[in-house]
Length: 242
Image 1 (cartoon, helix red, strand yellow):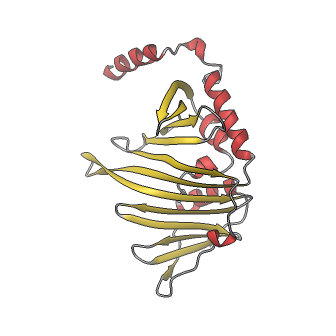
Image 2: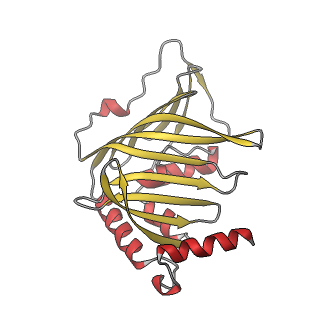
Image 3: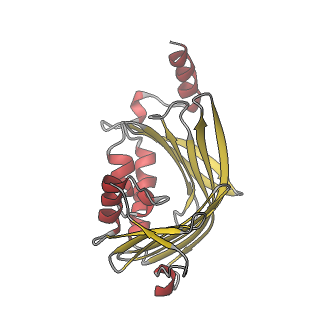
């Protein structure tokens, strides 16, 4: 009951009412912005981004720990992908190239590879289903972001215009079955992503993961070498476990 009493004043303060939503539970203004993002993203041949990340972990079911990191991510259509993650206690790279997906853990110097043919969306969905692997921001860059985040949401709201790194951004939030998400999208010019936050309600204390995009380079010239994994001479090959 205390939660309900808190939520009602907040939504009234933001100006939401039942009339602000269509039959699908998606606010028309939010839907308009998100569809413009989908159109923009689907028209890109390549993308290179730099982001700052923040990830929370629940420790001992009593409190949350937060870890900061950086992310470099590149995409070349139709099915090349790489990411380099460097965080407080994790340094990991992933590669998708020529139908092979690779994860390399720098901290323990091991890597695993598996066959991964198909589009980015097909590959990401299969990796999650088979191995529980979700490349960072995979849902955003799979080409199916609208389907994954909007069409399956019980509600999507347009919060307003916020500020990310001095940039005016549309602030949109959605509710899925087990998680909440928030997106900040550049208001002027191309609808580039400015920030992304996921709250996992399926885990006690609802930890969050966030990505704040510091650099966004669309249709940049990416060499095939960016997507190739060359194992260090002393690295150990291991198997993925389903």
